[in-house]
Image (cartoon, rainbow, N blue to C red; front, side, top):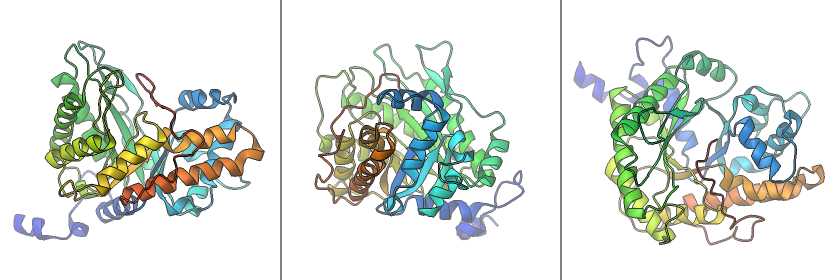
Length: 377
């Protein structure tokens, strides 16, 4: 019987007995659709507080109407679905109405062929007994929330764990294990309800550490996450990884080239990630729009050995900054803002194929640093 289990096609592998419905083949199909070559994921899942900071940067008040107007602008960008396969939403957005009469936000995404997703974690809380390390909350009630989100049209989810590097020795083994275990529990719960989990163990780039230290920590974190996913029987073919790119800390004086970052990042993945994984969608982690694209392009263009997964993007700030700057909260700027969003989406699409040649370098905020210390969504 065991032989038959391993020889069976994915569509016939049975779901957990705790689940009343078998989502296996649907999860695999969704993961493949999200990881299709030439496309990536738009992260528009900023919490109410975080989107408020973005709006404040262009002197726009943080009201429901303004948040709705901005996200309607993003989701009605004609042709966006050519470069974007999925969009991560905040709960308010997934369940809410758009500025288009009679249309919900998810309807706008579906009209562009973009798969709606949902951020499900409840943010990081202190991991007491450590040097300011954190563990992400949100497991309680997650199965029921995931069911509700699936019914609302979501087909994938995202959970962010934050790993710090510090001169005092962080990350501790405790922080790595607690966050890896929680990511795996989240992933398995979401799969039981039909949502493809995006697993995001972000090693944040605050501090003076060099790229070698970043590589060692990122590898240890990713290895722990893979072990936890295995322990929790997560279907890797129906899951995606959202890792940080491996680079020096924001306060390190030795700045690395895109080629060095690409090489270090891919090597860590080769050391840790099984080929079965559905895909890899990098976070931008406060890099400028242009540099994030250039690094992603280098990973796909350089001769770096086997890369059995699609190496793509799940960018928030690095897709939206020029768009936001062009919009300025004014309806008459909608078209100009959408043009900026489409340009960045196209640039990153080309980068997933290793074909980016600098077409977006003249964007409204292409070279602006987007780094925010201790960044919270």
